[in-house]
Length: 496
Image (cartoon, rainbow, N blue to C red):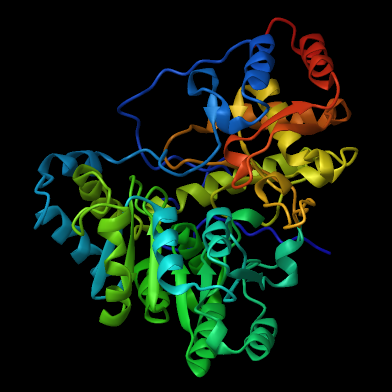
């Protein structure tokens, strides 16, 4: 198969359309740095000690021991000057807050939906949506699951059916929209389980667990039309929407002359409910649920005071809400939302040139390394993506996130549910890291790939029953980490 290179150099009249006389294709930061935070890079011997103190789980590392935090882009994106300024006008009123009115108006402006419920982040929205709509025996079709979404549905006795197109599970494939629904499979599932057992179809715009891969506007239209035919609600998880919007404009021929706002409005017109984590979509800490009908709003409204806070803040700080209002506008700016995909593609392509197996074409959220290929010698039962995450930290001080079997739930009989893909996600927080820092991460990962046979597996020593990847603890299956440190010192000398 020939892999097509999807250039992120915009063909449109935006500032990021800058070419270098040298011919190099490198992303250009479209912002300047005005506040800095000092970083720390512990020596490799300290890094291996910190990794084992953290149970070989990058979630349990202390930030003071991390040089580059590429764990997630959730709540760690840099705010703009306009966002910081907006926080000063926040209305602290418990009820009837003008801050709430501004946020509701902005969500309505962008999504065209009359009703809005605030929540403190995306998984809080998932809790409310599942509680309101899912009952035992229900089936929720989606292009691909997200960990917390699935957990909320299954705890209520429902189940999830993943209907991603086959290309979505191929790490290297020239399909521009690997996050698309397989429409024939969706239609067959509806006929099999009947619409009465499907409370809603969930669309994830930017499939997190398979490399941040987008889906097309046309595919969303087809899903919505099928659901309308059968009287089924359509729900959009818009947490990663900004990357998906950029890919639609770049890769979908019919959308090249549409603005980001126009594409967003078209997507929103197809949905009954849109929820989002503003920790991603909006560049601040919070979230919300936009709702088309009064009936659906009333079905969920009572859960806001019960689980979140009063209806005008939903567990959020009003200062964060003001920042979200500005952040939502910035998420409609192509110059702003192009930055993540451009830097991610640069990292993916540079690693690919060095032979490192990555997911291509690059998606949103982060650069995804194919741990199955990187660590062919590690059995899936020994968590190759988790082992690779530990090895990358030891090698570089860079923290990534396992997106593989560790992120799955065990089957009811206690057996392991092996993930379709074993990925290490190197997230790219927006407006946080410079190109030289990205180059450092590329260099250390490329060195590790040359020494990949030194990496060994992991085994659980403390395994929670739910969402084990957040706080489970593991140990190496051999002394492979000592050998890795020894080789690092041999090659890098006294370098950190």
